[in-house]
Image (cartoon, rainbow, N blue to C red):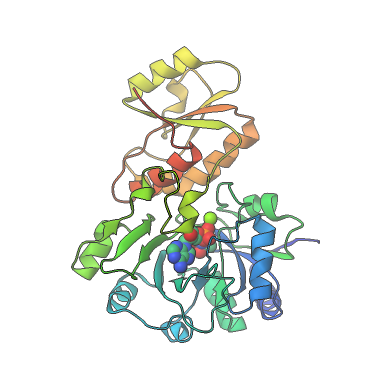
Length: 339
Ligand code: TXA
Ligand code: MG
């Protein structure tokens, strides 16, 4: 299959809308990462997403909408908490897990009776949904297991030949996938951290949000993941990544002791020049939003540079940093060295 990469304009939006209506795939930018869209009601169309990504069939997809009225039929009930969170954070990088409605294909939700829904703020997503009238299911546009793409070129690297159209809308603003919160149980529960933080949601809800322990730790053998995506190896570049937790001087010493061909550092802005191995910088130490923005493209740069072993500086674990740590620890297969 030939994969077209087109700039965003009326014509390419119309083509994307037409493809979605005909049950085909379209890759497109959102404010978080690039996604692969297919009509969430059309099981045959959604199956093509799983094929294009090589994604396990039991990992459900998020449904994307552009107005609250579209919730009708997609969810069977809008919980009170969803109304509060929507008022505070939609459109934006927040996905809410709610009871599944009759119009969403079982394939989209991997057979679960719940559905994750989000209303993106990205103008390209909004234009495509408006033009097509299609609420679309969309995972991140990487091959399963790879870092999520945050620009059209990285999307093309993974999806060339696997779908007909990539809309090139430039770099994504946030660079990590949406926050996922479940509103199914007695208490709201954070399933995947993102740019919208647990603290911000607690403020909007006026109550505590629980944190699924799988976010920062490895699942135990045989444990059932609340968010199926959390059980898979994820975000991994080709190199073996290890997180080094400690001061900059301890990090520098460790690199000096382990310097050899193929060893790279993944460090904060302004540090690369002071280190004894080649390094890629992934944002400012004091600004987790810049780390979120850079992390996935930095992991892909390490692949292109031919890195075999990567030692990464450790982010914090709270606020937006929780999202960065959650992705990086998966890229590192949970290897952390205390310096
Ligand atoms: O920012 C994003 O959310 C991007 C863009 C494209 O919108 N999409 C994205 O989708 O990251 P994906 O498929 O890569 O990740 C979806 C995550 C997975 O961890 C999945 O298990 C979880 O959301 N999820 C989806 N539906 C769920 C449900 N009904 N219950 C629990 N977890 C769910
Ligand atoms: Mg993904």
